[in-house]
Image 1 (tube, rainbow, N blue to C red):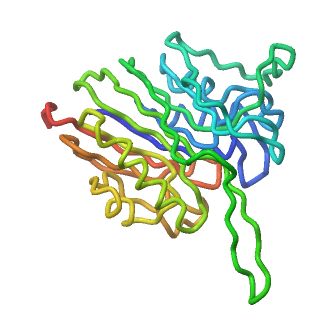
Image 2 (image 1 turned 180 degrees about the vertical axis):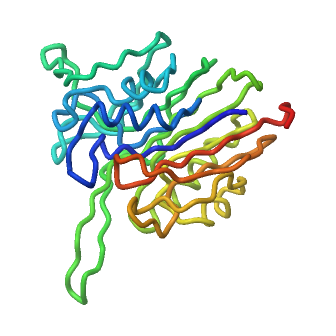
Length: 278
């Protein structure tokens, strides 16, 4: 059995007190006890999250040796630009969690970044970044009356795909975070399905898709592996976070967890591969 979780971090902020507490975030991740963890709204070297690498922090808290981060944007909130299409960063060595704030290495040339992370207790044969939007600004116009419009800007959306060597056998895992703008998340999900068509099975896709159930399964043709209300965190009335599967993978049960961090509940599910015995 493998324990999976998808966790929108909200850069580590709690909606109850508005604070970013790295120790609280680490404790929340440790309590999830996930073998594979998909992170959304993860940051690195951002002042509002104390300059920490939140993906590395999560890996240390989960006791996971492997973690990868793919920035969607670089720069400070409100003043950012599209991240270059580079290979995902990460390391195979054991991550270390520092309880205090980690100052950003401004002089080193590293820029503040925001994106998605993938944490795993199992090694990967390969890790790939999938870009889900064409180049150019992400701008939508929303009508607010007969002659009034509101301009909505959206960050670029990416996915991380990895082929993991798990105790139950090889498994392809894809983590992503899609747009909340009406209609855009569905288009990005269609693009993701096409990008995953040639990836080896079994396949598990998880993340904050910003698309309500049951539409993700209908759009992709993949099997929904976790059904639970995940948003908003206090009194959830919709499922925006999902775990989908294709191939010989089965779910043993799912739960949405209020971690005390974020405006989403984390979605946790236990999975079995086809080769595993119940």
